[in-house]
Image (cartoon, rainbow, N blue to C red; front, side, top):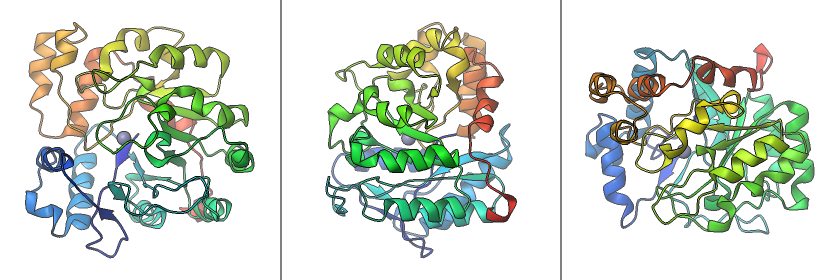
Length: 321
Ligand SMILES: [Zn+2]
């Protein structure tokens, strides 16, 4: 779960990428990690990205991956702010990709303040969406805004889970740092939506506030709250691995990738979550989806953490897929 699609619109997908300033070196790093030439960013990125990702899924231990759309940033009145985000991936593109490739399961992205939010939700449900993804702090979504109650209720009724970013973020521009707090997810949880706190609210940068304990406390209050271990193999996020492997949290943990964010086992090894032979064995594996999977297995994440998401995803009728 939690695999990003990126594109520049070269195939008519409607995707765009707007890499400015310090995001350039980061993007170059990600493209390299991915095994694509830097020129791909300005070339046929749509096709190259999807082909490479399919190759990686097919040659990995994973059966399928949940791929993510990325809605535009909107203001509180529901107007799109086109110049603010770093990238955009339309829902239709994700739904079409999933229809073509059984390796892909489509997670759409809808800003609930959009004037057509409910209409778009219905369209995505009819198109076979299995999940909804949003980043409250980057997309300016106050999930607790009472105006969104109907939207969350419809998601709950349709069995569409919400994957929401929690904790700091340093890959994308952040509009509302205060929305990184897991309490931002209270209203959808109260409406009965299955919510997955991406990164389990761990901090990303050294100076980010730490919300992991808030997330852990909330799992006691809300049986419909889960967390993913996406990007636990970057420097900061994996610090709480030990707690994630123990009950009561262990049965709420889901494997998340955050692909194409780079994956390295150094920090897990330094923290003693990974043995030296396991680290050496997987660190250089060329397929980063497989590397992440094997490192997480070696860190002690049980097989159920990789399959649990299947019971949470919306299972659309075959006609919609
Ligand atoms: Zn992500």
